Length: 301
Length: 273
Image (cartoon, rainbow over the protein chains, first blue to last red):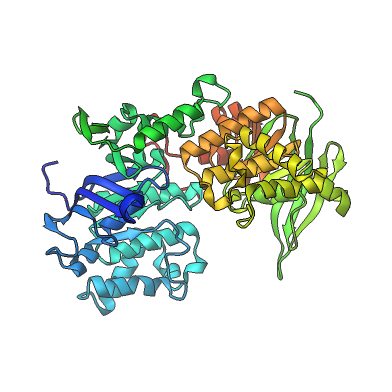
């Protein structure tokens, strides 16, 4: 991975509140997004995943650390033009029912970002582009373009959301739990689509989820987050097959697995043990240990 | 396992009455739940699994209409119960945990009064008796009894969900219906809660009707599983059978749509039709 990352977080921290009561939402977060690769950010609710996403989307300014876009500082005081950044970095939200304007047609929903993101595409060419975008996300332009969001299923809406990010010409897509509100049978279609975009268009993807199995399906690299810290990171297969941090192990052991029934005593999680792992993982862990090539974990200094 | 089912749903057919046409939400479903058993109902949204759960508790409202069929609980048809008998039946015999149950607690009442509400009505308990029972139930779900003086917002989502389960079990129901009880929670919390329910049903002997779309979880937790597709129960079997020898095409496709954590990651087919 000698290639320059398109987006990088360097030792980014974000606090909410002041003084004693300040909440450490993200602490010393570093990660890099490369074209054509996916980084999965996994963790439970409240672990700081969405805070990281919002920092990448420039919705929050980091309290310390740097957000780099092609090597340049992309925070408010930095040199990167906000418009250029917005064009390049787009987001797909969790709730496909709330993220499209119900008053507009799909055509309009795609035409606006196209006009803003790629103003040179006009008239007939714009029509063509919109049809192409819809075909790319496997929707039929002839029927879908005229529809309003309420006429589409959850999966179709999420496809429109993906097309919308492409309309602007996104190079980085932040997908915050894009499939958790969809039916199981359509989830895979969306994941396949994300994989295709990564492969064919070379977008960099930050995939946020609490589902380790889907993370394995779309990502090359994984970051496991707990209480605002990345406790373990590296290549997906290494982290998932050889987890080092107690929290990663806990997360893995709790993933539903039809092979192990609950009445199997070996499969039981001991609530006290779980509490201990949680309590200890909440402490600051400043020492980074290299487990292997592209596999790291943190432990208390 | 005894041969007399606790709950027996026979040829249940439920329509949602529409202006032009009726929508058949549940089509001729027959299933049985035995004492102490966990029965799982799996399927996608709109397949009618929640409609069945509601009907068992007689919670369905117009435009839902039960066309035909019987719901026998301990031999008595739930559909024939009058208002008074129904009040007796709900909570006492069948308790229900809803999908976002953690939001079904009353936000302006302390946890102890939410227990008292139920215990006073059904058992005529005094406040002191209710507190005692509440403490007992909270301990069962690993919540310190002192916290019954707290309000719901002072608990995390997982804890609220456990409180709801504790309230449901306060009257020792024979059957607990759980409609996606842990979908809104993360995996570790989900595991903790279901493991606890599994222990409790073994110790206390109640049955569970467990509804979810997560087949893997279902196989871990349930004794028998029914798979629903567009209102029909297309396959029924033990967890073993559903996992190792799924018969129906739809069951196989459902399995194929789960990315797995183990084994070959890229063996999946395209989205299901």
